Length: 430
Ligand SMILES: [Fe+2]
Ligand SMILES: [Fe+2]
Image (cartoon, rainbow, N blue to C red; front, side):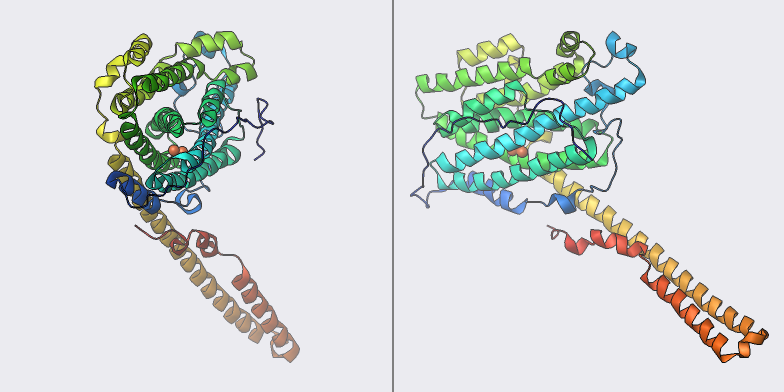
């Protein structure tokens, strides 16, 4: 599939790197929670080639298999007036835009967490960051593969994410990276992934989102552990700097995440579409999911002074501070869900392989019987003909029968096709 890029994305996004690289001298002081996350990070590495079934086609008119409400102008008068073919175009562009922001966000995380590995003072934090860097490489790989093989469209980085990227990589303090990535960006990703996992009708999307969410839950937990501990020792002036940064980021994401590039690309009247999108029930629900995660995290890490509370109240989301983490969103629950999905998908794949192998074996047996019958028939026919007694004619019959059998043996069969999915090629069962 050829990937087209509706918005210019031929220039890289750049920002100067701030900070000081640290080689930790203390290898002996450990945090048991960080060690557990690092152990999980090592154990839960997965291979997207074997874990995800990329051979499965998706609906080209709705590649993410989402309900129409996922398109933020769906249900409006403008949507109702558009021909059905345009609804398909819109679904594809909405899928491409959302997936493109995830893609750039994953690469953003990769770059920013590399900076955490370089600048964080603790050895354990560097080790965990190394597992996260590999996770983000895998996420970048799978979402890019989704865009190139299944959607065929890729959008550029939206302005609010570009600002967040510049702010966190150029700040010299390592915790700004953790705040921007593990508290803001990854909760944004989890809000998007949760909606897709829960609403999609496409098995590939459900699997992909479940496995990525398993990793993201570890990353978010790492941010909370590190920042909670770090912010306990900061002065009120230092905390205020972090709070200002968070407030600015939250406003930017709340107001800027409306898919502006989609509406500028499609010729339906960009301003009208943006206005409809801003008030759409789907976008409101999406923001709720975002702030349901960010607000309790801010309270937990100790960034919950008057400036933050005031801003959250203006956004109408301060009430989420009283929410505890939903049991379904906990690290253990997301981890268990992904492991269960892996087990059931492996069992389904194995059953499919065995079924196809049985069909292949049955077909081979039938072909063998057919060949034997044909040879016998040819012999019987030959015996009744004048040519049958001719040694040259009999030799010709034998040659032709042998050639037919050889060509059957060399024909690609159904079992050969499934060897690519041989479970022995896959990761060991955990
Ligand atoms: Fe990620
Ligand atoms: Fe992540």
